[in-house]
Image 1 (spheres, one colour):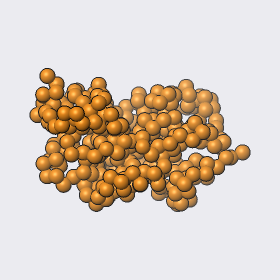
Image 2 (image 1 turned 90 degrees about the vertical axis):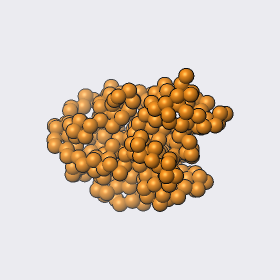
Image 3 (image 1 turned 60 degrees about the horizontal axis):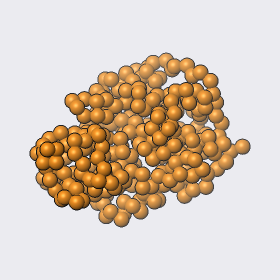
Length: 319
């Protein structure tokens, strides 16, 4: 028997079209249940060890009927390059990855995270952003992920999953969604772009440092919108709460029309930041700094800001 999750967020996203094409950026389990079996609908399960979300064995033990599996951490959605972790791979590599999952340009893709934590949500957000960056707009995220689907009592299947037949997927890179280090430098100099640090406050203040970055601190002039601030746990599954998010964006006083760049340590939490700002918050011109602090701190001359020291150079901190 289905159990309906009574949340304001669910009411909001379910107001979208009741068909598989052109879904809202964030959909609820009830919506997906109504669409299963629709033509050109692909349910893509991307759970991984992040937030103890599982792996392929977990997927084969319990999954949404008809879904396909691609590990967020191991399948090739991101790569390390030139000493920077977590970058977007080459377009042709992503075309091969996506086509190998049996996804073509006519498919609507529902990205399903594990639903086991806020950082896990970033897995879905990063893959959602990747599809958008490749020019594929028919994509959405299942709020609550697989944990939410299961917890609400919707149908679950199990058993060995066969690999889909590979198809052609053609991408057109949308450079407007990617911010380079040079563009972030120019944005700081022009002071016309809002920089949004999606990391938890301890990273933003410079009290905690990622091993991917050479030094702690944030990009000077940035504001902090932690990726996990509006992701809440309900009965063991984690859901993004749109109304809470919009209130937090309003508290920051962000200009919805101004150019905005989301960043973090390696472009994972930043994907959540980008999704929350652009797809849910309604900001009109949001990009993501793929390299984030891992790339920014490679240059000794770049400045970082710490709560207890003010603005200093990377080189000075790295000594």
